[in-house]
Length: 130
Picture 1 (tube, rainbow, N blue to C red):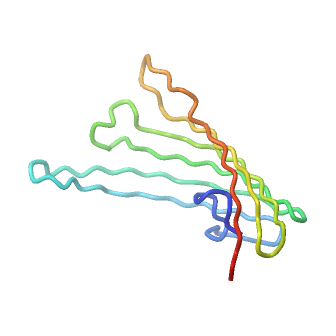
Picture 2: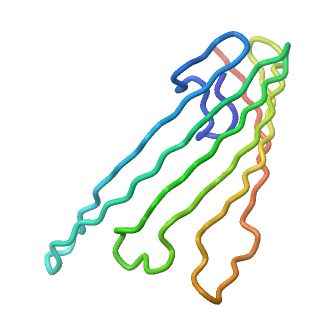
């Protein structure tokens, strides 16, 4: 099943069993600017760790995301971000799943600046037609 947000896709897990699952992924990217003036490239990296379990028709998952923009041009003090996501899915039948997840977002704040609450709650419905 793949419901808990596009980033919590259990199908992409490294391990998936009948009652529990988990995964980890690392990403590194180099960006090249498109202008002809600068020949700058910047890089960023990040990873996520996912773990969860399935109990009868209820599925729960916890995911930790980290991204580092340290080398990103003009990032200044805003160079890291972490997210925690807790998700619950209800498997209605073989073709239908209802899910809700809560994401706690923790961006790095520059000195003297306080961000408003950026956390989010998502409710999703997945219906497999094939």
